[in-house]
Length: 107
Image (cartoon, rainbow, N blue to C red; front, side):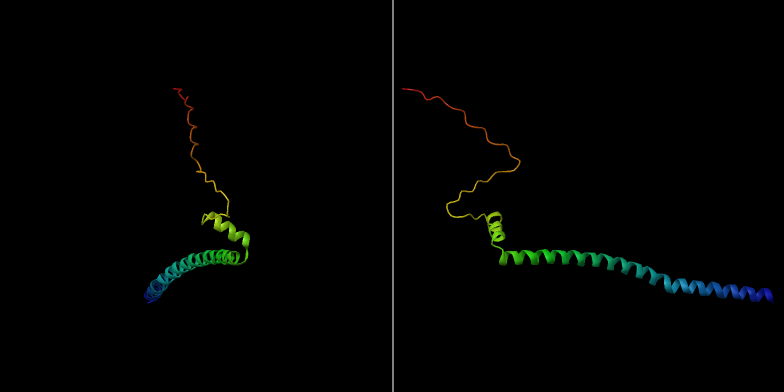
């Protein structure tokens, strides 16, 4: 009789353990997945906030800083002051060879 009662207890404990695993392990996996997604989204939000701060500073500079406005106009728009000559150099290219002098023939 005592032996049968021990078997019943073992079966009950195993059933309780299996039901615990069946009910809570998928939720734990889902929690870990959601926590990972939250971390990635938080990092993305931080990155977007940094970009927003940089854009806000650039807009502020474009509205109020004449030196920055001139810099942008020169670099991005290719504008210049009146009577100013702009020289453009290609980076990484070799300079063109000077043309060879040709002797003029006298006729």
